Image 1 (cartoon, rainbow, N blue to C red):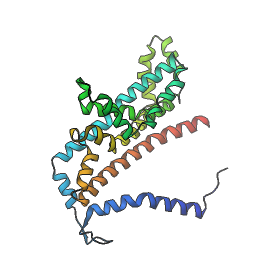
Image 2: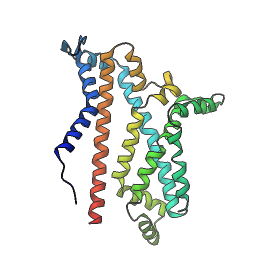
Image 3: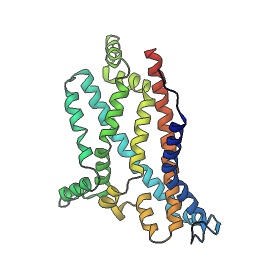
Image 4: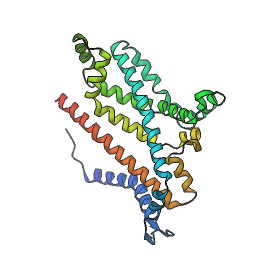
Length: 268
């Protein structure tokens, strides 16, 4: 039986919403403010956004940030998909090991992960001297826990093994059936998982600052530099980051909602 919400419940939700939205609202207001010396601005202007988009490098930085956010997610998802396929078809007991291995990045995030990578590959030549490659590799490892859990939940939400068995009986390769039948059937869940992971990387600062730094400046790096020059311009960059994250959150909720509704209909 579902309990009806009371006035106290609604009041608590309003307080939580205000607490979560207040920093974003004040940041947006500050990005438009002119001569903000007290609590209230003297006026509003678009100067911060005009100066921001007048800079030709900002679009390159935005594109660079999108590439380094999406690329590692695709690589990580491909690895996880192949691992889940192998576990479902040939090594069911391997899932206990995969559950443990994919949780390791939880304990080596941020400064620990970046410091370890720099210390390990500082004297190594070849491609490992490329800081962008090291950053992308670190991101692949960083999003492993989030992608693995999402992929495993999505793939096992349907009768995957039964579908692959039927495809094999009909003369289709199980691996080909996995990529042509299973993945298209669960693309909403996979897409929401990928968007969530990409959102984490899009807002990252610690890893990209320590590993790549000036070699590959992203929006997080530019934001940190801008804070020392102009607070309003930094607020404008923060607003753009916040809007992108809100869009990604909405898309994740949209695609996840369809999966939840479909599961509820199957249970009914």
